[in-house]
Image 1: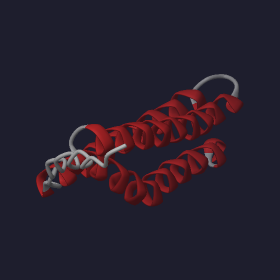
Image 2: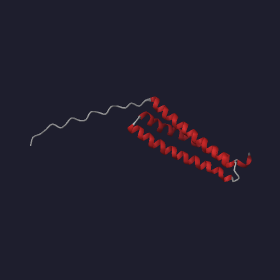
Image 3: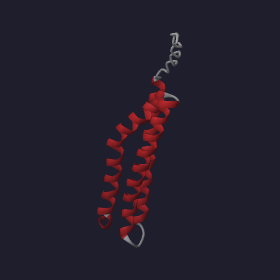
Image 4: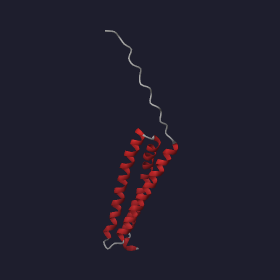
Length: 123
């Protein structure tokens, strides 16, 4: 049995740069989605409080929590897929944007919703 030379290694994959513009686009996209979710939650609380049953206002708080969970799942899944297979900058921007916006937007949105619900009879 004779010795043979192994085949050469495959060529390296082309480098996919992370574009700063795409990162900021992803961050802005998530911030916009967070603001829409907050507006939907606050709107549901206001509409619920104007009904005959005052407990309907809490539906907006639960809706806000559900929307935040949906945004988390969407940003995580889409961000990872984009980082691995498509534009790394946009995927990274989605993950950074969610991490930054989740500290501010839900706290403000849920805080406003709870303030509206708790002060319903005092307005």
